[in-house]
Length: 233
Length: 211
Image 1 (cartoon, each protein chain N blue to C red):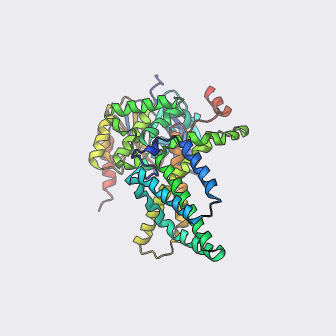
Image 2 (image 1 turned 60 degrees about the vertical axis):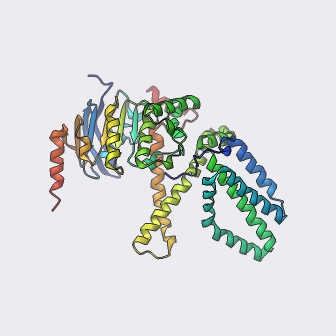
Image 3 (image 1 turned 45 degrees about the horizontal axis):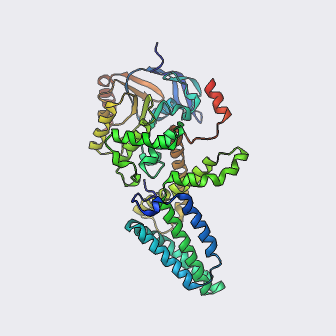
């Protein structure tokens, strides 16, 4: 089996102060677009944090495109890009150019090379005038785009998105989804907006730290919706 | 996210960060023995002119003085009472000049330039196997997150008042602490997820790699 473009979990357990967050989880993801759904507290965020080493499992093995995340997030950052829910939590620098250069400098590029590459990706995405802009002058959607570009410029193989569109209006959400559609990377996305996952290849439904259902969006999403709808009187 | 940086370009943006910081340091030493009120008032005026020369957005930043005003008044009153109004005026003006100038530097300096400028100061730390870049990064992060924490306070106050909270704002200290710690967790995660900050090669990490 090709291990080079697969995310594989093998009997992974994750504990947080004696409670099992993830319970003996095994799966292997080779699909280009994988969605993760589940109610709050089902372990979604923990699962994706295991993929880039932000969390380490208590037992079990993980292999991400041939690499072991036990090397830590710093080493994994070259292969796994991570987009968080709130852009305000991940934007560190005041200007767009600095924000985009940061990861590249960590990868060993010189400041000048990093700035050139940063400008390159802005031009590629028709935002060449953004480089000197102050990030606080951008809208929420534009900030999230900066976060995505800041990760893409590092040319990862996997892109993880943890509820990336929660705070965005519908138009912005669609625009960013269009961008995600064009990417060559494997994408793993947590979302509560089932519509955004409709075109994905595979959906994992997590419940109580276990996979509750696993299949295509057409199989899993309607059932998930129905299970939640019961609670609306 | 709010930031202390002002993207609107100006002549002060083009000046190297090191010169700006060095200038501020020299000025703060030189201003210390000045006992002439007229001269000090002139310096204050010059500072305001400097803000004006940078442009309208900089002048708007002078609103920063508003929350500080009660503090300055308190210092002025205490000092007037203990050492006289002349020394008190000198002290307050000197503080105003230095705070305003320091603020102007943060407004017009990109964070990575600031980092590059202050990193050499921490160079001796290399002796203790501490990467000077790390400390410089911590300093710039501090500058970067001041306005963020101010926004957190603002939100907490709104939530407090929206539910009929009275003026005992000090009670917000604990939620503010909790929120700051959570915020720093988020930022640390985001930093790590993009490769952290480059450091002196750590033997433990390279062992990991060869495994």
